[in-house]
Amino acid sequence: MKKVLAAVLSGLLCVTAFTGCSATELSCLKMSKEIMDTMKTCKVSGQIQMDMDFDSLAAFSSELSGMEISAEELGVTGKKSAKLDYVSRMDMTNMAFDMDMDLTYDGKKYELGDLYYGLTDGVYISGETILGVYQLAMDVAKPNEDSYLLQEGFAKDLKTVLNQHKYIQIVDMEEMGVSQEELEAVLPTDYQGIYDAAFRFYEDVFKGFQTDMVKEVSGGYQIQTDGKAAAQMLVSMLDFIAQNPDQVFDATEVYLTEVVKQMNDEEALEEIQELMVMIKEEKQSFISTVYYLKATLESALQDDAVSKTLDSLHYVTTMKKNGDKFVSDSVFDVTYKGQKVLKITEKSTTEKMSVNMSAPKNSVSMDTLMENVSALIHKYNPVTGVEMSWGWGDDNTEAMLLAERAEEVPFGFMEDHAWVDMQIKDGRAYLPLRLICNTLGEPVTWNNAEKTAYVIVDGKNVPMKGLLQDGRTFVAVRDFEKLGYTVSYVNEDGIKTATIAR
Image (cartoon, rainbow, N blue to C red; front, side):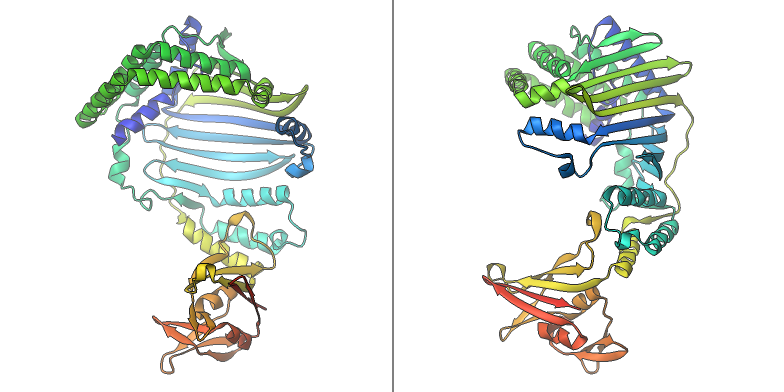
Protein backbone atom coordinates (compact mmCIF):
# COMPACT_ATOMS: atom_id res chain seq x y z
CA MET A 1 0.00 0.00 0.00
CA LYS A 2 2.96 2.33 0.59
CA LYS A 3 3.83 2.14 -3.10
CA VAL A 4 0.29 3.10 -4.03
CA LEU A 5 0.19 6.09 -1.69
CA ALA A 6 3.55 7.34 -2.96
CA ALA A 7 2.44 7.02 -6.55
CA VAL A 8 -0.90 8.73 -5.87
CA LEU A 9 0.82 11.69 -4.23
CA SER A 10 3.38 11.92 -7.03
CA GLY A 11 0.61 12.09 -9.58
CA LEU A 12 -1.70 14.49 -7.78
CA LEU A 13 1.06 16.97 -6.99
CA CYS A 14 1.80 17.40 -10.67
CA VAL A 15 -1.52 19.10 -11.46
CA THR A 16 -2.19 22.82 -11.30
CA ALA A 17 -4.01 24.07 -8.20
CA PHE A 18 -6.76 25.79 -10.22
CA THR A 19 -8.79 22.96 -11.65
CA GLY A 20 -11.54 23.41 -14.18
CA CYS A 21 -12.71 21.92 -17.42
CA SER A 22 -13.41 24.82 -19.76
CA ALA A 23 -11.56 24.69 -23.08
CA THR A 24 -9.01 27.23 -21.82
CA GLU A 25 -8.57 25.45 -18.51
CA LEU A 26 -8.04 22.10 -20.20
CA SER A 27 -5.44 23.66 -22.50
CA CYS A 28 -3.71 25.14 -19.45
CA LEU A 29 -3.84 21.71 -17.83
CA LYS A 30 -2.22 20.26 -20.95
CA MET A 31 0.66 22.75 -20.65
CA SER A 32 1.03 21.81 -16.99
CA LYS A 33 1.43 18.21 -18.10
CA GLU A 34 4.13 19.23 -20.58
CA ILE A 35 5.95 21.01 -17.76
CA MET A 36 5.75 17.91 -15.56
CA ASP A 37 7.05 15.77 -18.41
CA THR A 38 10.00 18.16 -18.71
CA MET A 39 10.61 18.05 -14.96
CA LYS A 40 11.33 14.31 -14.92
CA THR A 41 15.00 15.21 -15.37
CA CYS A 42 15.57 18.94 -15.57
CA LYS A 43 17.16 22.14 -14.35
CA VAL A 44 15.06 24.85 -12.71
CA SER A 45 16.56 28.28 -12.13
CA GLY A 46 14.82 31.24 -10.67
CA GLN A 47 14.49 34.09 -8.24
CA ILE A 48 12.07 34.78 -5.39
CA GLN A 49 11.75 38.37 -4.21
CA MET A 50 9.92 39.25 -0.99
CA ASP A 51 9.16 42.83 0.09
CA MET A 52 7.61 43.49 3.50
CA ASP A 53 6.36 46.73 5.06
CA PHE A 54 6.35 46.00 8.80
CA ASP A 55 4.68 49.29 9.73
CA SER A 56 1.74 48.45 7.43
CA LEU A 57 1.76 44.88 8.75
CA ALA A 58 1.43 46.19 12.31
CA ALA A 59 -1.50 48.44 11.34
CA PHE A 60 -3.20 45.58 9.46
CA SER A 61 -2.66 43.18 12.36
CA SER A 62 -4.10 45.75 14.78
CA GLU A 63 -7.31 46.08 12.77
CA LEU A 64 -7.75 42.33 12.37
CA SER A 65 -7.10 41.52 16.03
CA GLY A 66 -8.79 44.55 17.56
CA MET A 67 -5.64 45.17 19.62
CA GLU A 68 -2.99 47.83 19.18
CA ILE A 69 0.14 46.21 17.73
CA SER A 70 3.25 48.23 16.92
CA ALA A 71 6.03 47.38 14.49
CA GLU A 72 8.44 47.47 17.44
CA GLU A 73 6.50 44.60 19.03
CA LEU A 74 6.98 42.61 15.83
CA GLY A 75 10.73 43.11 16.26
CA VAL A 76 11.28 44.81 12.88
CA THR A 77 10.26 48.24 11.60
CA GLY A 78 10.10 49.88 8.19
CA LYS A 79 10.43 48.17 4.83
CA LYS A 80 12.61 45.10 4.33
CA SER A 81 13.40 43.05 1.26
CA ALA A 82 14.88 39.62 0.62
CA LYS A 83 15.81 37.95 -2.65
CA LEU A 84 16.58 34.25 -3.10
CA ASP A 85 18.41 33.14 -6.25
CA TYR A 86 18.46 29.40 -6.86
CA VAL A 87 19.47 26.76 -9.37
CA SER A 88 18.07 23.26 -8.92
CA ARG A 89 18.46 19.94 -10.71
CA MET A 90 15.72 17.31 -10.48
CA ASP A 91 15.50 13.60 -11.13
CA MET A 92 11.88 12.67 -10.47
CA THR A 93 12.47 9.07 -11.54
CA ASN A 94 14.71 8.52 -8.52
CA MET A 95 13.06 11.20 -6.37
CA ALA A 96 16.23 13.26 -5.96
CA PHE A 97 17.15 16.91 -6.36
CA ASP A 98 19.85 19.37 -5.41
CA MET A 99 19.80 23.15 -5.11
CA ASP A 100 22.35 25.95 -4.93
CA MET A 101 21.08 29.09 -3.17
CA ASP A 102 22.11 32.69 -2.52
CA LEU A 103 20.11 35.15 -0.42
CA THR A 104 20.23 38.93 -0.54
CA TYR A 105 18.67 40.59 2.52
CA ASP A 106 18.51 44.31 3.05
CA GLY A 107 21.09 44.79 0.30
CA LYS A 108 23.62 42.27 1.68
CA LYS A 109 24.33 38.94 -0.03
CA TYR A 110 24.58 35.66 1.88
CA GLU A 111 25.80 32.46 0.25
CA LEU A 112 23.54 29.63 1.44
CA GLY A 113 25.43 26.83 -0.24
CA ASP A 114 23.90 23.57 -1.40
CA LEU A 115 21.01 21.31 -0.44
CA TYR A 116 20.62 17.70 -1.59
CA TYR A 117 17.60 15.44 -1.15
CA GLY A 118 17.33 11.83 -2.23
CA LEU A 119 14.50 9.53 -1.22
CA THR A 120 16.89 6.64 -0.67
CA ASP A 121 19.85 8.77 0.51
CA GLY A 122 18.44 11.32 2.94
CA VAL A 123 18.90 15.08 3.24
CA TYR A 124 22.26 16.88 3.12
CA ILE A 125 23.23 20.54 3.51
CA SER A 126 26.62 22.12 2.99
CA GLY A 127 28.70 23.69 5.73
CA GLU A 128 28.41 26.89 3.71
CA THR A 129 24.64 26.78 4.31
CA ILE A 130 25.05 26.83 8.08
CA LEU A 131 27.66 29.57 7.89
CA GLY A 132 25.38 31.70 5.71
CA VAL A 133 22.44 31.21 8.08
CA TYR A 134 24.68 32.18 11.02
CA GLN A 135 25.80 35.38 9.29
CA LEU A 136 22.20 36.23 8.38
CA ALA A 137 20.97 35.55 11.92
CA MET A 138 23.62 37.84 13.40
CA ASP A 139 22.57 40.68 11.10
CA VAL A 140 18.85 40.19 11.71
CA ALA A 141 18.81 39.33 15.42
CA LYS A 142 21.51 41.91 16.24
CA PRO A 143 22.77 40.42 19.54
CA ASN A 144 24.53 42.55 22.14
CA GLU A 145 27.78 43.93 20.74
CA ASP A 146 29.67 42.15 23.52
CA SER A 147 28.19 38.77 22.55
CA TYR A 148 30.64 35.95 21.89
CA LEU A 149 28.64 35.26 18.71
CA LEU A 150 30.05 38.47 17.22
CA GLN A 151 33.65 37.83 18.23
CA GLU A 152 36.04 37.49 15.32
CA GLY A 153 37.60 34.41 16.93
CA PHE A 154 34.25 32.60 17.23
CA ALA A 155 33.33 33.32 13.60
CA LYS A 156 36.76 32.12 12.44
CA ASP A 157 36.60 28.92 14.52
CA LEU A 158 33.04 28.21 13.35
CA LYS A 159 34.14 28.53 9.74
CA THR A 160 37.04 26.14 10.42
CA VAL A 161 34.67 23.56 11.95
CA LEU A 162 32.27 23.81 9.00
CA ASN A 163 35.07 23.61 6.43
CA GLN A 164 36.34 20.32 7.86
CA HIS A 165 33.55 18.53 5.99
CA LYS A 166 31.74 19.91 2.97
CA TYR A 167 28.34 18.38 3.77
CA ILE A 168 26.26 17.45 6.81
CA GLN A 169 23.67 14.67 6.61
CA ILE A 170 20.70 16.04 8.55
CA VAL A 171 18.34 13.14 7.72
CA ASP A 172 19.53 9.54 7.48
CA MET A 173 16.82 7.19 6.20
CA GLU A 174 18.41 4.10 7.74
CA GLU A 175 18.60 5.75 11.17
CA MET A 176 14.89 6.51 10.83
CA GLY A 177 14.31 2.77 10.58
CA VAL A 178 13.55 2.68 6.85
CA SER A 179 15.49 0.10 4.84
CA GLN A 180 16.77 0.64 1.31
CA GLU A 181 14.41 -2.10 0.11
CA GLU A 182 11.41 -0.25 1.56
CA LEU A 183 12.53 3.04 0.04
CA GLU A 184 13.09 1.55 -3.40
CA ALA A 185 9.68 -0.12 -3.18
CA VAL A 186 7.89 3.25 -3.06
CA LEU A 187 9.59 4.47 -6.23
CA PRO A 188 7.12 4.11 -9.11
CA THR A 189 8.53 2.34 -12.14
CA ASP A 190 6.56 4.42 -14.67
CA TYR A 191 6.04 8.06 -13.81
CA GLN A 192 4.75 8.81 -17.29
CA GLY A 193 1.81 6.45 -16.82
CA ILE A 194 1.08 7.95 -13.40
CA TYR A 195 1.20 11.51 -14.74
CA ASP A 196 -1.15 10.60 -17.58
CA ALA A 197 -3.55 8.94 -15.16
CA ALA A 198 -3.47 11.96 -12.82
CA PHE A 199 -4.36 14.42 -15.56
CA ARG A 200 -7.14 12.16 -16.83
CA PHE A 201 -8.43 11.99 -13.27
CA TYR A 202 -8.71 15.76 -13.04
CA GLU A 203 -10.42 15.97 -16.40
CA ASP A 204 -12.93 13.29 -15.39
CA VAL A 205 -13.60 14.32 -11.80
CA PHE A 206 -14.18 18.01 -12.63
CA LYS A 207 -15.96 17.55 -15.95
CA GLY A 208 -18.51 20.37 -16.15
CA PHE A 209 -16.80 22.53 -13.49
CA GLN A 210 -15.20 25.89 -14.39
CA THR A 211 -13.16 28.33 -12.34
CA ASP A 212 -13.12 31.27 -14.78
CA MET A 213 -9.68 32.13 -13.41
CA VAL A 214 -7.63 31.02 -16.41
CA LYS A 215 -7.15 33.04 -19.58
CA GLU A 216 -5.00 32.55 -22.64
CA VAL A 217 -2.12 34.96 -23.21
CA SER A 218 0.56 35.10 -25.88
CA GLY A 219 2.64 31.94 -25.60
CA GLY A 220 0.79 30.50 -22.63
CA TYR A 221 -1.77 31.00 -19.89
CA GLN A 222 -2.45 33.26 -16.94
CA ILE A 223 -4.22 32.39 -13.69
CA GLN A 224 -5.46 35.37 -11.69
CA THR A 225 -7.55 35.57 -8.54
CA ASP A 226 -8.02 37.33 -5.23
CA GLY A 227 -8.74 35.94 -1.80
CA LYS A 228 -12.52 36.10 -1.98
CA ALA A 229 -12.67 34.64 -5.49
CA ALA A 230 -10.44 31.72 -4.46
CA ALA A 231 -12.56 31.06 -1.38
CA GLN A 232 -15.76 31.20 -3.43
CA MET A 233 -14.22 28.83 -5.97
CA LEU A 234 -13.61 26.35 -3.15
CA VAL A 235 -17.25 26.70 -2.04
CA SER A 236 -18.40 26.05 -5.61
CA MET A 237 -16.04 23.08 -5.92
CA LEU A 238 -17.44 21.47 -2.76
CA ASP A 239 -20.97 22.03 -4.07
CA PHE A 240 -20.02 20.45 -7.40
CA ILE A 241 -18.51 17.40 -5.68
CA ALA A 242 -21.59 16.94 -3.48
CA GLN A 243 -23.87 17.10 -6.52
CA ASN A 244 -21.74 14.70 -8.59
CA PRO A 245 -20.54 12.00 -6.18
CA ASP A 246 -20.74 9.15 -8.71
CA GLN A 247 -18.54 11.11 -11.14
CA VAL A 248 -16.01 11.70 -8.36
CA PHE A 249 -16.09 8.04 -7.25
CA ASP A 250 -15.76 6.65 -10.76
CA ALA A 251 -12.88 8.96 -11.68
CA THR A 252 -11.10 8.15 -8.42
CA GLU A 253 -11.49 4.41 -8.92
CA VAL A 254 -10.18 4.57 -12.48
CA TYR A 255 -7.20 6.65 -11.37
CA LEU A 256 -6.21 4.45 -8.41
CA THR A 257 -6.66 1.29 -10.46
CA GLU A 258 -4.43 2.66 -13.22
CA VAL A 259 -1.75 3.65 -10.70
CA VAL A 260 -1.72 0.19 -9.15
CA LYS A 261 -1.54 -1.46 -12.57
CA GLN A 262 1.47 0.70 -13.44
CA MET A 263 3.15 -0.70 -10.33
CA ASN A 264 2.18 -4.34 -10.90
CA ASP A 265 0.88 -4.69 -7.34
CA GLU A 266 -1.95 -7.25 -7.30
CA GLU A 267 -2.34 -7.10 -3.53
CA ALA A 268 -2.76 -3.33 -3.60
CA LEU A 269 -5.27 -3.65 -6.45
CA GLU A 270 -7.51 -5.77 -4.24
CA GLU A 271 -7.17 -3.21 -1.42
CA ILE A 272 -8.20 -0.40 -3.77
CA GLN A 273 -11.24 -2.31 -4.96
CA GLU A 274 -12.31 -3.04 -1.38
CA LEU A 275 -11.80 0.60 -0.44
CA MET A 276 -13.94 1.90 -3.31
CA VAL A 277 -16.77 -0.54 -2.47
CA MET A 278 -16.74 0.75 1.10
CA ILE A 279 -16.73 4.41 -0.01
CA LYS A 280 -19.61 3.92 -2.44
CA GLU A 281 -21.66 2.23 0.26
CA GLU A 282 -21.26 5.39 2.34
CA LYS A 283 -22.27 7.77 -0.47
CA GLN A 284 -24.93 9.62 1.53
CA SER A 285 -22.53 10.10 4.42
CA PHE A 286 -19.93 11.40 1.95
CA ILE A 287 -22.42 13.90 0.48
CA SER A 288 -23.45 15.10 3.95
CA THR A 289 -19.83 15.60 4.95
CA VAL A 290 -19.06 17.64 1.83
CA TYR A 291 -22.13 19.84 2.37
CA TYR A 292 -21.10 20.30 6.00
CA LEU A 293 -17.62 21.45 4.90
CA LYS A 294 -19.25 23.84 2.41
CA ALA A 295 -21.53 25.32 5.09
CA THR A 296 -18.62 25.67 7.52
CA LEU A 297 -16.57 27.50 4.90
CA GLU A 298 -19.45 29.81 3.96
CA SER A 299 -19.97 30.65 7.63
CA ALA A 300 -16.27 31.44 8.08
CA LEU A 301 -16.40 33.78 5.08
CA GLN A 302 -18.97 35.91 6.92
CA ASP A 303 -16.46 36.72 9.66
CA ASP A 304 -15.27 40.32 9.42
CA ALA A 305 -11.58 39.51 10.01
CA VAL A 306 -11.69 36.70 7.45
CA SER A 307 -13.42 38.96 4.93
CA LYS A 308 -10.84 41.72 5.38
CA THR A 309 -7.99 39.24 5.06
CA LEU A 310 -9.40 37.77 1.84
CA ASP A 311 -9.94 41.28 0.45
CA SER A 312 -6.24 41.96 0.93
CA LEU A 313 -4.98 38.90 -0.99
CA HIS A 314 -4.17 38.96 -4.70
CA TYR A 315 -2.43 36.35 -6.86
CA VAL A 316 -1.45 36.10 -10.51
CA THR A 317 0.78 33.60 -12.29
CA THR A 318 1.73 33.30 -15.93
CA MET A 319 3.32 30.28 -17.57
CA LYS A 320 4.64 30.33 -21.10
CA LYS A 321 6.52 28.02 -23.42
CA ASN A 322 9.65 29.52 -24.95
CA GLY A 323 11.21 27.02 -27.36
CA ASP A 324 12.00 23.94 -25.28
CA LYS A 325 11.86 25.89 -22.01
CA PHE A 326 8.98 26.87 -19.75
CA VAL A 327 8.98 30.28 -18.07
CA SER A 328 6.80 31.11 -15.07
CA ASP A 329 6.12 34.48 -13.40
CA SER A 330 4.06 34.73 -10.22
CA VAL A 331 3.04 37.61 -7.95
CA PHE A 332 1.33 37.26 -4.57
CA ASP A 333 0.58 40.39 -2.57
CA VAL A 334 -1.25 41.58 0.53
CA THR A 335 -2.61 45.13 0.39
CA TYR A 336 -4.04 47.16 3.27
CA LYS A 337 -5.61 50.60 2.67
CA GLY A 338 -3.69 51.02 -0.55
CA GLN A 339 -0.36 50.07 1.03
CA LYS A 340 1.52 46.90 0.08
CA VAL A 341 1.99 44.91 3.29
CA LEU A 342 3.68 41.98 1.55
CA LYS A 343 4.66 41.26 -2.02
CA ILE A 344 6.24 38.01 -3.23
CA THR A 345 7.35 37.66 -6.83
CA GLU A 346 8.89 34.58 -8.39
CA LYS A 347 10.42 34.02 -11.80
CA SER A 348 11.57 30.58 -12.87
CA THR A 349 12.75 28.76 -15.97
CA THR A 350 12.40 24.99 -16.39
CA GLU A 351 14.37 23.15 -19.05
CA LYS A 352 14.94 19.47 -19.74
CA MET A 353 18.41 18.26 -18.83
CA SER A 354 20.07 14.90 -18.29
CA VAL A 355 21.16 14.71 -14.66
CA ASN A 356 23.16 12.18 -12.69
CA MET A 357 22.91 12.85 -8.99
CA SER A 358 24.18 10.95 -5.98
CA ALA A 359 24.56 11.64 -2.27
CA PRO A 360 27.56 13.81 -1.28
CA LYS A 361 30.60 11.73 -0.37
CA ASN A 362 32.43 14.05 2.03
CA SER A 363 29.83 14.32 4.79
CA VAL A 364 29.38 13.91 8.54
CA SER A 365 26.33 13.18 10.64
CA MET A 366 24.34 15.89 12.37
CA ASP A 367 25.42 14.43 15.72
CA THR A 368 29.09 14.93 14.82
CA LEU A 369 28.45 18.50 13.77
CA MET A 370 26.55 19.19 17.00
CA GLU A 371 29.44 17.82 19.04
CA ASN A 372 31.95 20.06 17.24
CA VAL A 373 29.83 23.20 17.48
CA SER A 374 28.93 22.44 21.12
CA ALA A 375 32.64 22.27 21.96
CA LEU A 376 33.08 25.64 20.25
CA ILE A 377 30.22 27.21 22.20
CA HIS A 378 31.63 25.81 25.45
CA LYS A 379 34.94 27.46 24.60
CA TYR A 380 33.47 30.94 24.10
CA ASN A 381 30.45 30.71 26.37
CA PRO A 382 31.30 28.22 29.14
CA VAL A 383 28.94 27.03 31.83
CA THR A 384 29.32 29.22 34.93
CA GLY A 385 27.17 27.13 37.22
CA VAL A 386 24.37 24.62 37.51
CA GLU A 387 21.00 24.78 39.18
CA MET A 388 19.51 21.55 40.55
CA SER A 389 15.84 21.34 41.52
CA TRP A 390 13.90 18.41 42.98
CA GLY A 391 10.93 17.53 45.18
CA TRP A 392 8.01 17.72 42.73
CA GLY A 393 5.26 15.47 44.06
CA ASP A 394 7.60 14.31 46.85
CA ASP A 395 9.85 12.70 44.21
CA ASN A 396 13.43 12.77 45.49
CA THR A 397 14.88 10.29 42.99
CA GLU A 398 15.36 12.73 40.09
CA ALA A 399 16.47 16.34 39.81
CA MET A 400 16.25 18.87 37.00
CA LEU A 401 19.69 20.13 35.98
CA LEU A 402 19.84 23.57 34.38
CA ALA A 403 23.21 24.80 33.13
CA GLU A 404 23.84 28.52 33.53
CA ARG A 405 25.98 30.49 31.09
CA ALA A 406 27.04 34.09 30.81
CA GLU A 407 24.94 34.29 27.63
CA GLU A 408 21.96 32.25 26.52
CA VAL A 409 22.64 29.93 23.60
CA PRO A 410 20.41 31.08 20.70
CA PHE A 411 18.01 29.08 18.53
CA GLY A 412 17.74 26.26 21.08
CA PHE A 413 20.93 24.80 19.58
CA MET A 414 22.02 23.23 22.88
CA GLU A 415 19.92 21.54 25.51
CA ASP A 416 21.21 23.01 28.78
CA HIS A 417 18.72 21.13 30.91
CA ALA A 418 18.19 17.47 31.72
CA TRP A 419 16.66 15.12 34.27
CA VAL A 420 19.33 13.32 36.34
CA ASP A 421 19.33 10.68 39.08
CA MET A 422 19.95 11.77 42.68
CA GLN A 423 20.06 10.25 46.18
CA ILE A 424 18.75 11.37 49.59
CA LYS A 425 20.46 10.07 52.76
CA ASP A 426 19.96 11.31 56.29
CA GLY A 427 18.13 14.34 54.91
CA ARG A 428 21.04 15.38 52.66
CA ALA A 429 20.90 15.56 48.87
CA TYR A 430 23.57 13.71 46.87
CA LEU A 431 24.09 14.57 43.21
CA PRO A 432 25.93 12.69 40.40
CA LEU A 433 29.52 13.95 40.53
CA ARG A 434 30.75 13.15 37.04
CA LEU A 435 27.66 14.50 35.25
CA ILE A 436 27.79 17.83 37.07
CA CYS A 437 31.57 18.13 36.68
CA ASN A 438 31.26 17.36 32.95
CA THR A 439 28.69 20.15 32.68
CA LEU A 440 31.00 22.54 34.55
CA GLY A 441 34.02 21.45 32.52
CA GLU A 442 35.86 19.96 35.50
CA PRO A 443 37.98 16.81 34.82
CA VAL A 444 37.20 13.77 37.01
CA THR A 445 39.49 10.78 37.67
CA TRP A 446 38.84 7.53 39.52
CA ASN A 447 41.18 5.73 41.91
CA ASN A 448 40.00 2.13 41.85
CA ALA A 449 42.18 1.03 44.77
CA GLU A 450 40.74 3.72 47.04
CA LYS A 451 37.27 3.55 45.43
CA THR A 452 37.41 7.35 45.36
CA ALA A 453 36.72 9.93 42.67
CA TYR A 454 39.04 12.94 42.33
CA VAL A 455 38.48 16.29 40.62
CA ILE A 456 41.56 18.05 39.28
CA VAL A 457 41.63 21.69 40.47
CA ASP A 458 44.67 23.88 39.69
CA GLY A 459 46.74 20.74 39.13
CA LYS A 460 45.75 19.17 42.45
CA ASN A 461 43.56 16.12 43.00
CA VAL A 462 40.66 16.95 45.28
CA PRO A 463 39.00 13.81 46.71
CA MET A 464 35.21 13.71 46.40
CA LYS A 465 33.87 10.90 48.56
CA GLY A 466 30.19 10.13 48.73
CA LEU A 467 27.73 7.38 47.93
CA LEU A 468 28.59 4.68 45.40
CA GLN A 469 25.58 3.51 43.41
CA ASP A 470 25.83 1.24 40.35
CA GLY A 471 29.42 2.30 39.73
CA ARG A 472 28.64 6.02 40.03
CA THR A 473 29.66 8.50 42.72
CA PHE A 474 27.02 10.75 44.26
CA VAL A 475 28.34 13.59 46.44
CA ALA A 476 26.66 15.97 48.86
CA VAL A 477 25.73 19.35 47.38
CA ARG A 478 27.95 21.26 49.84
CA ASP A 479 31.00 19.21 48.78
CA PHE A 480 31.24 21.28 45.60
CA GLU A 481 32.50 24.14 47.79
CA LYS A 482 35.78 22.19 48.04
CA LEU A 483 36.20 22.80 44.29
CA GLY A 484 35.99 26.58 44.71
CA TYR A 485 32.27 26.93 43.97
CA THR A 486 29.66 28.71 46.05
CA VAL A 487 26.58 26.69 46.92
CA SER A 488 23.20 28.18 47.79
CA TYR A 489 20.03 26.34 48.75
CA VAL A 490 16.36 27.33 48.92
CA ASN A 491 13.16 25.43 49.72
CA GLU A 492 9.93 26.88 48.38
CA ASP A 493 6.75 24.92 49.03
CA GLY A 494 8.67 21.66 49.05
CA ILE A 495 10.61 22.36 45.85
CA LYS A 496 14.30 22.36 46.71
CA THR A 497 16.83 24.19 44.55
CA ALA A 498 20.60 24.08 44.92
CA THR A 499 22.73 26.46 42.86
CA ILE A 500 26.40 25.65 42.29
CA ALA A 501 28.18 28.73 40.87
CA ARG A 502 31.71 29.89 40.22
